[in-house]
Image 1: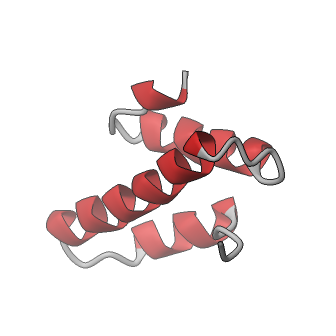
Image 2: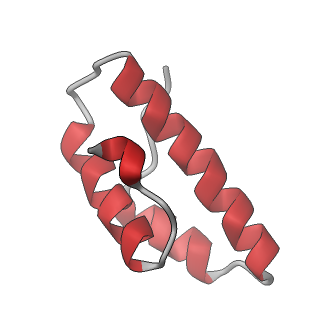
Amino acid sequence: MPAPIRLRELIRTIRTARTQAEEREMIQKECAAIRSSFREEDNTYRCRNVAKLLYMHMLGYPAHFGQ
């Protein structure tokens, strides 16, 4: 599994989205990657993934699967 993107890169890609649909697509892709990381119980990037979930939650996207 490739290394997930960093929080700073996620913020940059979300901010450069031209439409809200494009932003949602980016969020959905990253949420899927985070879910698979949690499912595999990969603790290497857990802190990074939790930080990204917090950011997504602040934007108003559902992040309940990270509880």
